[in-house]
Each structure stands twice: as C-alpha cells, then as structure tokens.
Image (cartoon, rainbow, N blue to C red; front, top):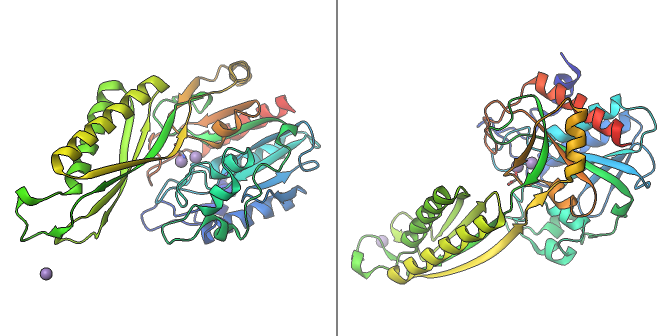
Length: 384
Ligand code: HGY
Ligand code: MN
Ligand code: MN
Ligand code: MN
C-alpha cells in the first residue's frame, strides 16, 4: 500500500454516510474528529499546532507565522453527501509533502473552517475571517439549519483578521479537480470563475390544496418553478452555470399551497459580464412571473466572489517545474481564491476520472493522488 493510500485510509471512513458521500459539516463531530487527526499528524512530525480564533487550524514546521513561511492546506468540511476528496485531499497531501521537503523548511499546513458554507451559508468563512473579508460579528451571527450560530459553535467571537498573514510568502492549495478538464494526473490553476449564491424568497398565499380553484391561487411554488427554468435557459444560452439545488417550502405540507418558497441560486460564469447578464435576466423574469402569479419576490446575495486570476508568473513557473503541467481555470470556489487577494497564491489540481464532485461519485486514483503529493513537495521545495 502506498504512503498516500495508507494515510488516506486513516480518514476515509470519518463522516461517511450510507450514501457513500460525506456529512462533514464544520465544527460537528466528524469534522472535529478530522481536526484531532490533523493534530496527531502534526505532532507525529514535530510540528507546532495553532488555532487562529476563527476556527482555522494550522501546523507549523518552524515558528508560527515566521516570516517567509509557505502555507499549504485546504478544508475538511463537505457539502451534504459530498465526495471525500474535496478538501481533505489537500490536507493529507500536505502532510505527505512535508515529509519529503528538506528539514527546517518554513512550511505550514492550514485547515480552513466552513469552506463549503454547507452549515452556516457563507463559503470560505474561515479564510474570509482570517483576511478580514467578513467581520467577526457578521460571521458569529450566521446560523445553521438548527438555529445554532457560528459563534456558539466556535464557542467564542471569532478573532477576525488577527494573524500576521503578511508574513506568509505564498499559499499553495492542492485540490481534486471538480470538472472533466484534467487529462493528466496534475494540473495548475489559472483562475476561479466569478460566482455567488443568492437566497430568493417567493411569498404567496397559503391555502387548501383541495378547495382552492387554480384561478384563485397565488402560489409561490409556481414562481419558483419558472425561475428555476429561466435560470437554466439563460445559463444554456450564455455558457454560464446556474443551479437551484436547495429549496424550502412553508408550511411544506402535501395538502397546502405554500405561503413561502425559499430557493438558493448558485450562479457562475467564466467572466463577470456573463454572470451579471445571467443574474439580471433571471431576476427580471422572476419578477415578471411574480406579477403574473400575484406573488412577491425578495433576493439577498449571501456571498459573491469576484473572478480570481492566480499569479500568472507563478502558475507558469509551476507548470514548467511540473513538466509542462496543464494550466486550467476552475468553476469551483476555494480558500485559495480568498487568499490570492492577499499573497502570492497557486492551486494544484489532481485528476478526477469521473469529473463528478459534491456527490458520492467523486473519485481520484491512489496513483494520481501520489503524483499530486510529489508535485506539491516539488512546489513547496521550490518556494521555500
Ligand atoms: O462551491 C464551491 O465552489 C466550492 O466547492 N466551495
Ligand atoms: Mn467543494
Ligand atoms: Mn473544496
Ligand atoms: Mn383538512
């Protein structure tokens, strides 16, 4: 069994559901177990473990936050029934890469909290707090579906931008590729598509499903359904990606016309203009349909991420270092996208044969993952 396969096996069952996907929500038992695993791996290597007061965990080969440190790592949390590689692959690979880099190199490994936004609704919450892109107060007040706030889950008010991130020389995140673009084991990231998530609330008139004539209804599910179709049509027309994968109805009863339907639009595009055009069109059509249905619509942008272009020179250098590894963009958000506004940042992608992600079918071969570890070790060696 390869070093990678052996270390991977230590975490593969943590948080795994009968679906084969993972339920590793931030600061819940499975993710806390993975944090304990992280601490054990760090101690096994004589690394110093620190927490930054925002829920982010770090392991340091040298002094914490020593100037010139190169940070690598990713996240442990998953979307509901997500794949096992999205996040943890970057952390497991980091520990194995540290084993290969010369002793004394100033390298650190980070495990960022709530990257998926799967529990508290804002993605990259930990890296946004670390870089001051969200206030501790706003983060602390975010609630999960059981009404637990992030502050309660963390056990304190987050410390926000308190660590000297300016001391870091670079951040490199290794991540499984989440599309179908990578034909070789390892690639280098060029950009992250602009993207965001909008909470849309459709308000109508609750009523009896059996006694209310169709002409007398103000049914928000109808307006919602038209909005889903509009988003899908607009995305197909413009090459954007639009998804409404999460929906809630109140009172959510089979025999009651809903009074309210809440749906989240996840929209992304290769450039900002296309994304803006999609959004404008979907909101226009949704409001028009609300007029027809006699329903009301309110929209809240829960998080919007501008286009991220990674350091081109660094990406090219890494591509050459890795034997002309392909350089490719991603439609997925990452903590690297947040950190790239504050320090030189690069991403490495490991091939995903199914191309599926955020679902149990996400996959990567041990051979490709081992190639990813080698690549990360070479990159860390070259940067330190
Ligand atoms: O949703 C995303 O793009 C990322 O996986 N958090
Ligand atoms: Mn993800
Ligand atoms: Mn991820
Ligand atoms: Mn009844």
